Length: 399
Image 1 (cartoon, one colour):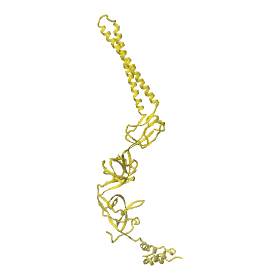
Image 2 (tube, one colour):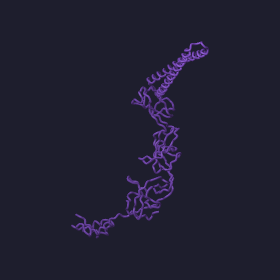
Image 3 (cartoon, one colour):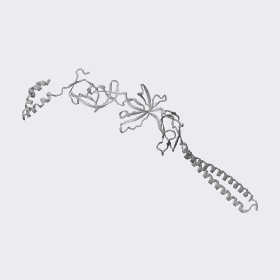
Image 4 (spheres, helix red, strand yellow):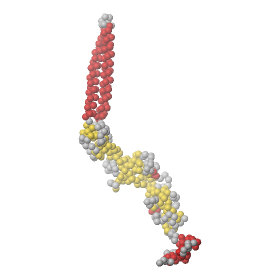
């Protein structure tokens, strides 16, 4: 059973006036070979009959004005210094003088290593220094005797016949030989002393000291462990300086201009939701990360009271001061979907989706960047149900 075409159209609200025309078109289609110039001629009437009615909307104008506000960016608190202490020489852990949570001071010995072979090499080198000093003293005594003999014979040679002619020559030869021996031993003593210095430096590496004031955050070894460059374990302790912290904020490209060292940043952390903290901008790389198009800016925070800890997440209020005026719209005028963010401009009775990027909130308006101009009329309360290109009518109550 099939309902006739005129009854179908009669049942559609507002379309009964076109019933006779649509019925004729329907009959023409129903008849074999009936899709002809008649139905084609009636096609505009059909389209007009089923067209989407215009939606009534309330509009507002895009505002242009100077903006000063703040945007909230995520940040991270990091220790000012962080280091893993490692063994520079191979040896066994003899003592560990600090553990997780221990406060340490710069220069404090934290780990003592034992390396008997290094001690033996130092002792051998020092013995050579002592031996060289002993031989030098003996050679200098012989040199003094040879010099005395040479002086005495030289004085005696002034008296004819007092000494044989070759005695003075022999004394001079003995003096020169003694001087040569002393110089040789002095060179050997210097070489022995030079050999001791690097060995003592090597021995000093057995005492692993704190490079700065801080806190031990992790202990990696225990007494008796074999550590060193040639072993599987080289790390000993991890130390962080927590009295000063680095607040690292990734600033988007659009907000990176005008950064000034010394500027103050307010931030909050989830651990203290009711408190605001202040850090001072200290390091600006002046280069954007190619992957994120953002600039990692570092600010210093004085954590002398220990309120915060490295690794905490921070929400940073980033001050915004535009060099030029910005465009602002009501927040409800901005539609955000999974694919785009846009406002709906009303132009010639049509809805036009205009892609925008949201900026800072200024009072009851939000900054937008897109292909808009001051004074453009946009839908005040926009939704994606108002389709792009659909007809719209401005409400008579529009203000």
